[in-house]
Length: 96
Image 1: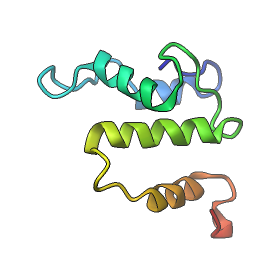
Image 2: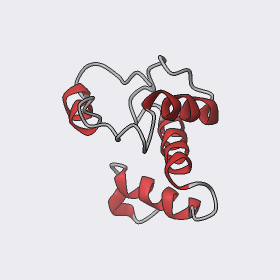
Image 3: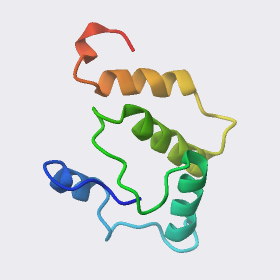
């Protein structure tokens, strides 16, 4: 998926550096992107927006990536929601 441009680009580039890819036997990047796109309904080339403006899209991408990496049996969706809550600016409130 194409990521946003602007103030977050440098940080996102570090997180999603194109030079850091799984070995071909482990993950085909194009298949990975296609599966995440299929699960989220977000086209591969569509920007996903700024997390604070589009939290549901970012959460969907995170869940889709977790499914791609681990399957669905071992996922704890409530833990993922709590993690998202901790990453939000209001994390000190203790609520999700």
